[in-house]
Amino acid sequence: MEKIVSLSKRRGYVFQSSEIYGGLNGCWDYGPLGVELLRNIKEQWWQAMTYREDIEGIDASILMHPRVWEASGHVANFTDPMVDCKECKARFRADQIEDAPCGSPAYKGRKAAKCQAEGKFTDARQFNLMFKTFVGPVEDSSSVVYLRPETAQGIYVNFLNVLSASRQRPPFGIAQIGKAFRNEINTKNFLFRTREFEQMEMQFFVKPGSDEQWFSYWKDQRLEWFLRLGMRKEKLRFHRHEPDKLAHYAKDAYDIEYDFPFGWGEIEGIHNRTDYDLSRHEEFSGKSMKYFDEQSKERYTPFIIETSAGASRSFMAFLTDAYREEEAPTADGATEIRTVLGLHPKLAPLKAAVFPLVNRDGMPEIARSIEAAIRPHFRVFYDESGAVGRRYRRQDEAGTPFCITVDSQSLADRTVTVRERDSMRQERVSADRAVDFLRDRISGVPAGRQ
Ligand code: GAP
Image 1: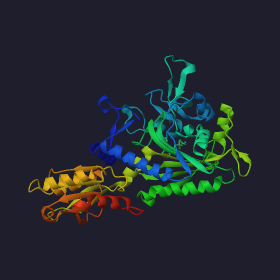
Image 2 (image 1 turned 60 degrees about the vertical axis):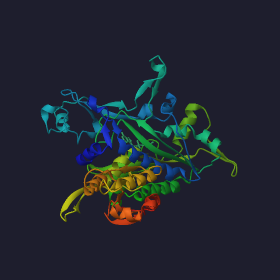
Image 3 (image 1 turned 120 degrees about the vertical axis):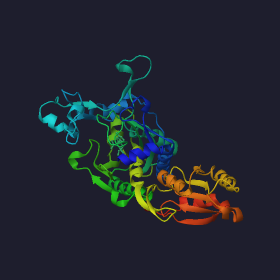
Image 4 (image 1 turned 90 degrees about the horizontal axis):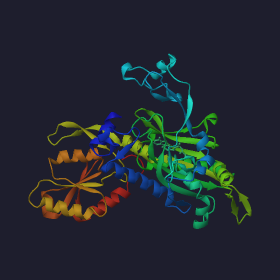
């Protein structure tokens, strides 16, 4: 994990938020390469989920009417049990003390569980994870609103709007990507548990009775999405929630888990939420959330199958999965360790780098013209500094799938070498075909790891 955090900072993937002020716990900033990777993940999700006939997209506001969170159950139930250490004042989630270290620097290496056994902790009390703020200039209880802790509710409250605007009928879905906020008691493991994060959620509205079939369909589809983008099969698994662990709204639930360096962790949840959400909003708003099927003349409250992925957690899983160190030959026949981010080309922040082999004989001019041809289509990087082997290594570490080098043969026949990141194989391609070559290779990558 330390290596990934360090590479993230060095290469501009992720920075600590407000770092020059000592950082803000549980908040992270995406740097120049990180923002590209995050956007590519979201774009791949958006394409997979909304480039189909039966799903519409929306973008709802983060601040919503406070009654939404009463109806959803978040005001009453979105809590974690919290305890405080009376001695060092550290705060813990009561259900996560087992793994936690003691909060005091004076007791290095000590476990919080030991302090608890010695009676240093307060009794557990419930702590609501929603961030509160106020609308308008008066800060009283009538102006309280919440930063949304999930994007799902913005979809439920727009169910009727989308239904009438899009002329969809169940089974159909609504998808949304957006920020969510949770005042987590303990943030940990880099991007895994943060206070501000992004979700990619899709709510699929179905006729009661067809819910189990659609649940199974979406469960398979979502695992397939991670595999198609190159994630290793053995690093992914389903975890089914035990009946006594199901959320209050759920009839069935599976997590997709990734095997992180700190252990298996949830990256996406697939839930059969029954008619709970629409029924609750009907009850609290007084508006009928039922659907009337003109053909069968039936009126019913749709069941909802939810797929809820964390964009930030998916980012961390893709980054972790792509990271590797391996032996590679050097120009003089020796070997060295190269660090590679084997990201799927569709996710890679930079699609290509262009190098002149040397900075003379017209090579930089040709390289610049190739870069200029690629730039309107793909993120590309131009690099003329240092030995070409070093330049390859820098791009391997950044995850760039293709390096295009202009050499002496290019001067004679306008061909260039294209070196592929994972296999390190090189082939000669016409410089004029560089854009088509990249387009074919990026879109034509087969399923499974590169
Ligand atoms: N609408 C259902 C829902 O929000 P969830 O299991 O609480 O379900 C869904 O969250 C996904 O959101 C998780 O699988 C995870 O990827 C992401 N997520 C939740 N809390 C997070 C946090 N504190 N930091 C980063 N990602 C988080």
